[in-house]
Image 1 (spheres, rainbow, N blue to C red):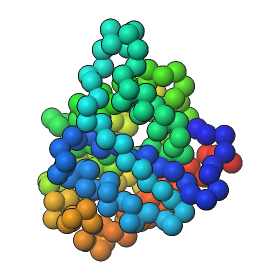
Image 2: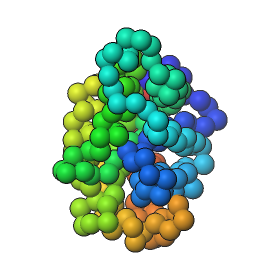
Image 3: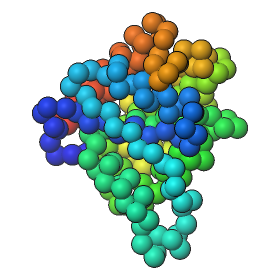
Image 4: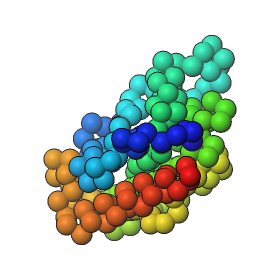
Length: 188
């Protein structure tokens, strides 16, 4: 957690747990930028190219992309993780990113964070969220418990990186405001 919050814009780092350019979760994170409060900046980090965590690689030195990821987490007032659900759990991509981030001592502890997910199905990837939340809590991150945001039928609610469903837009705006309030409260 940073000692001071940027007085002009609160910085949220957004991380998608899917590598596909056309993934729903990447589009969902891009849609957040237009729905965020005016004093919030949402910056995305692309995990494409991040190697699978390997202790032998770590001993030789952190890869450049991992160092850049660490720097972005440090610079952020809060982190938004967007995970698809694969086989009832978070994606391997997001788990790998969490594993690399955890290798820098103290980087994740006490950092405000939240999780978002969606799916073409009716549950919105809630099981993926559960597994990710468990890992983030284990690492000592301050995970926003409520409201949680799992968007069912996401493929029908997104078009060209915009949420087109009005009730979903409102829920996402309220969720982002709650996360902003959570970050501010934790930094008092």
